[in-house]
Image 1 (spheres, rainbow, N blue to C red):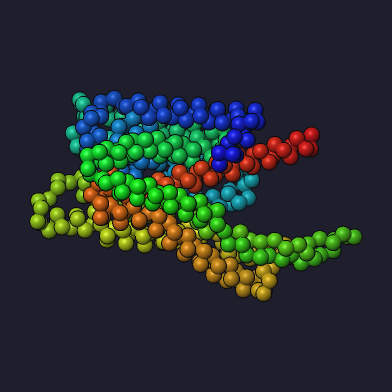
Image 2 (tube, helix red, strand yellow; image 1 turned 180 degrees about the vertical axis):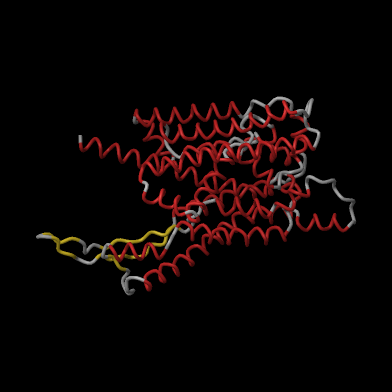
Length: 431
């Protein structure tokens, strides 16, 4: 990775793109430090300290800590991510959107992008209103609960999410690419220094032993190695194209392969599974804590986001969503039909239904392995927090999700830079 960045820095065109990307990230981080008016920031931060392992804690991680500070970028890229996923799912359910995606060409992609932008603003309004009601119901406003304060806070949150979407698009167009992913990467990495300081503080106060800290660091390193290995792993199904004569020339006859990524859906199954699995604990956080020894106290302990039951439900939901997204993104019947039309076949299988069944069988095996991998990476930090009080208080159960996102975006960025360097070399050769 460092070698790729060093080589890209030597090229003037790519150096400008890198500097532009860093400038956009600087603007984003400055926005994360500007709070919205009328909110008691200190009381809000103390309130979120008790919600580290809920879905609100996940939003706080994704926003780089801006969510717990009620800054103008508090909603971060969550509205855009939700809008993108909703539009992607609707393209399967609504034939008009499906035609727009597959047959609309560049104009169709532009229309889908516009629909996604409008959806982002609408979801931003809903989430901004929900956040305002959370602040209002918990008496976290400095002064006033009138309509003016509500309008200012909600519109500020919505405008901030729209601005982040625009900043991401600028990185994609004028920077190194993957704009939204880069912003998400910057948000999570920005919290690493505070996490390291907190870990050192726990060691100095006796809350965490030196051996425990070394174990956590080695575990994080092992998870990074595993993520890099699985992210680059793929199942390659051999494909043979039959020879055909067109005029006086012979075409086809070459051998290739059909790539099938092990982790096809990325971190999306984790995000959705965590949102659903932590929903009971998140709802319970809005109500007064029941007295110790009561039924509801024991019930909340069982569904807590650091419990074994939560880890099991979380793991099963990850597997479900991994299969769901692989089904959405990879259609074996369509691929088998395309191979048949182009004269391609998988050795040992007849074109058509036998080919699609073989592809589906291979897809299920690969997806199961990828889902188990995601589940292990996400659940291991939770299991650690079950046996470690200091780890539980530090919100380590969100660590697996953060590491997957950071490493995945870093690998995508390196591949994007390498692709741009290759294209530049081709252009120089043709010129």
